[in-house]
Image (spheres, rainbow, N blue to C red):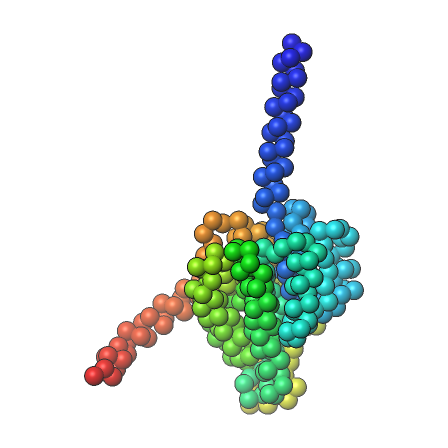
Amino acid sequence: MTINIFRDKLYTLIGYIKSEIKKMKQQKIWFITGASKGMGLLLTKLLLSNGDKVAATSRNLSQLKENVGIESESFLPLAVDITKNHSVIEAISHTVEYFGGLDVVVNNAGFSYIGSVEELTDEEFRKALDVNLFGAVNVIRVSLSQFRKQHSGHIINIASAAGYIAGANIGSYVTSKFAMVGLTESLALEIAPLNIKATVVLPGSFRTNFLNEDSLNYAKKPISEYESAKTYKSYADRAGTQPGDPKKLVVELFNLVNMEKPPVHLILGSDSYKMITNKMKTNLQDFENYRLISDSTNF
């Protein structure tokens, strides 16, 4: 009887150890940009609750620490300006040194200007691209150095349904997100032989603070002939009514990195899926309508 009890306890202990080892293998080291609010903040909190290790970045370090509200050896808050390559190098080097490696990069930082192409100044348009596109390129370039050494890693680029669908008076944002899609597609082809993965995520409208008035940026030099003011108001009016649940979104990002063969494109949100697939159908019909002209240019 005593032997049976001892054996049962031993089996229970072995099962627990195996479970903990499996859990440790699944836990990863993440580097997340734009983590002080919205989706980045929710993802950071989810990962820390799972026992993962997170280097979370923001331009505002005090706000980041306050909003995450967790003090843990698994949480590395970093003040980073992703538009400055030296800042990114320092941050990723610190992450690798602190945690001993790097598994997942999430390029989440971004913002939008409301304004037509003519209304936006050169400075405004370039700023949108610097943050939404070139900042991500900086992070990708630096992280790949570590991923190549490990022969593993996953780069997740957060784009938008606007990476496939244009909209009036958000040209700078659309430009950056279309570019993010193409960038990720090229990147995925380049790094697949190195056992490194890349995914571009295309969310629809999720109930974060992205559409709040304090998060929207309006062109400094509006032109009355355009309707950018109406566009600004329409976005502000939708704040708090978006159909997407951001808590469910970050769960899917967590699940994404545990897929054996993750997709290069991941649409999140039924609204995004409908808009993107309808746009692709429309494009295909347009291509067919003008196919004779396309074919006529051959020798």
